[in-house]
Image (tube, rainbow, N blue to C red; front, side):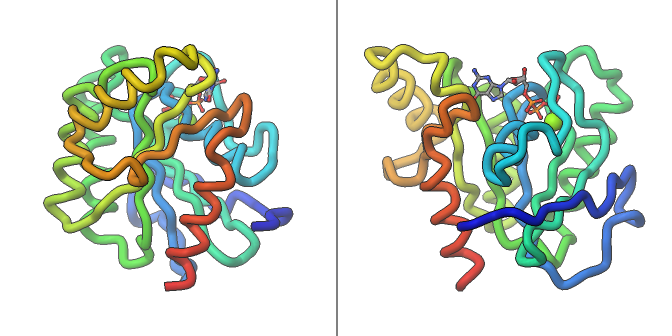
Length: 195
Ligand code: GTP
Ligand code: MG
């Protein structure tokens, strides 16, 4: 995939602000700070088009990025961040659920989990909603660079067991720092867009 032309279409705070278009959409889901915005920047070859932060809770709106007029990345606020007020967390949760259930442009969900830690209850809950809606997400384990090589097989095993993933090919180990996993993700997106 040769990506050069990307722009932010809109930052939406509610579904009525979502763009009306025919572009297929790839949705990014994951806990706050897991690396969703960094993931987008890595795939689109930009340092900081999607705003990132070491503080969780950076992305507060639903951001739609037009990629080469071919598809759209949808960057959602993270779930499971304790310092965000309960009302706001419920609001994010509703937005995610509503998007998953109703958005006709949706063709692919990428669920990001932090490779350093066992997936959390929130990760499992969101994964459950996806399966309830007959969506099989691509699981991307982020911050792979932060896990020592010798530790990786063990973390992978914990991840697969906790999320009940049977096939090794259904998980991509990814790093926005080293770009590990970038090619695999691009190939999978391309495959889905062609289908
Ligand atoms: P919210 O918008 O708050 O939900 O967070 P997010 O999921 O968009 O995370 P973001 O991309 O802003 O990244 C959070 C922090 O993790 C930033 O400091 C990033 O630099 C860092 N980070 C993201 N991906 C990686 C990675 O693969 N490796 C390392 N070492 N750091 C990463
Ligand atoms: Mg973000």
